[in-house]
Image (cartoon, rainbow, N blue to C red; front, side):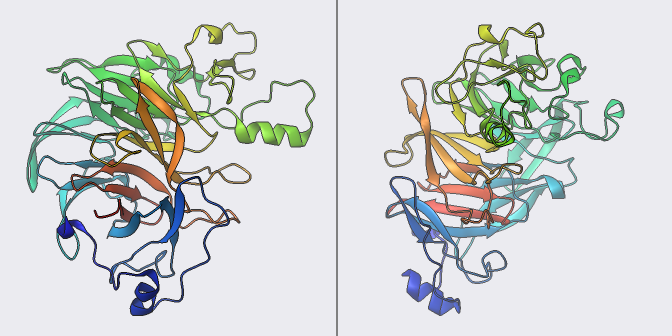
Length: 423
């Protein structure tokens, strides 16, 4: 649909650069994941503030295009509304923005303001759920207006909770709604290995569930360090993408310093897991096994003798991502896009903050195969240069009603449109 496409200064990359007054495109990356090609990110006039004041290249599927669709500082999670508007949360501003596709660019308005770090967004028909840092709210969504606020879960822990003294590393929360109308939301841990979270009231390091029609929330999955990614799969199951712990102790006897650094770099992997009632994801006593070792392993720092939790009894997670890659937004696409991306999970991978060399940001895709997820593959890359410097860090990706992907980036302050050929 042409009306959805961002206008740029020209069709071909070389013409684009010349018309917009930019220098020639940068050299392509030295290598690219299979099936991906370098493509200059198209930047409409007026959206070319840093980091787009210099040409940028992304790695995208061959023949696809990527453009800057909107500039939103610190954009986080996104959801498509029933009326075809894209909602984007901005926790730093306390806002939820509404973007209506139009030419020459989306029409933007503030849908909700004055909230406490709004993050997760989910729809159940005309009802909009918003995850604040201290509450889960429901609103009546009526086009440009969302009103009738009801708090469906309140008193949630955040930096203002008296017992935490202002220390909370994972205050942002996410929300999802299943086919029956049950509401799920994440509560992250207060720190890296704060074991007291497991017995805290209200609970922390959990995925919580509110039954259909409302009622008190209760833990649905435990031992979830930071399940920022939260979404419902094509078969109705609920999944989470989890940021696992940092600075893990090396369990091997007598390793060298270099060996320890390599171990910390690559352990433990991040998790992508199907949630079932009472599922235990181990944190901080058990960690997902490294590639080729799917079973959970005992954390020798927090569970030295295995008495805290029997790691061998925990079912392996369904998929993993590289250690410290920081998966954030999670969404599913089911038949709206061309193969091989027609059905599967989209994960915004933020990239590492404490790994040497840094784990690169990307948008990952996991195909939906026989009721579960296949291996990770890169859908969009190229946000990180070979020296580890970055110009972007994706947060979330959602499939649009026009057959394109829309990607939020809180580092570049952008929403991208990633389009297959002809879209």
